[in-house]
Picture (cartoon, helix red, strand yellow):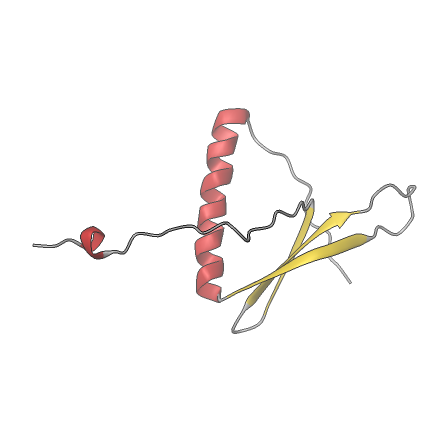
Length: 97
């Protein structure tokens, strides 16, 4: 009797055309049918009180189902990181607009 695991195809991660982008800022927007994740770099070298410029480098568009799976994966990675290296303190997001 075959189990579900035996019937799943193996996955080959092809990375020949992969590119790597650094981001220290991200934002998320959504519609009923998709979730858009924007990645960029904070150009924070300006003085206090000056507008902060974020250079958007990439936009990742996901179905809501893929976004939920990504959310679960990221939560697991952050929990593992914090159990090994300690809690990460982050600022509360400011309302935009």
